[in-house]
Length: 137
Image (cartoon, rainbow, N blue to C red):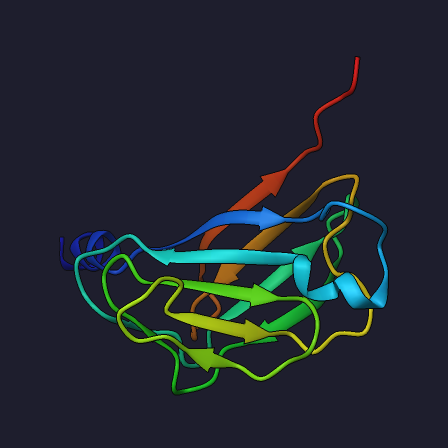
């Protein structure tokens, strides 16, 4: 029962992937591509050693981001993880709590759709979100 209760209280969720920002895909728009995580649980969670990975359509994992020891989320706190580079920042008392940067020089999330998977520091899958673009009629 304790393991189930811990999962309920410490649930970090992949809330959104901005996988196809408006406009052309250029190096200047890398930080417009991002993923949002939120602590949906009832207690503070340390993300030290947690990983977020993307999956290709064939299931291959190509990109991995590992959270460092300073990243903690109180209940309802959010992280925005941008694909590009800039200085990471914490905004206390505001959301998102953290603006982090993957530091990539190319886009991570496929415009044709992608899957983000979140793993805890033990490698256990905690959540995933698949995005599929809407078909234009």
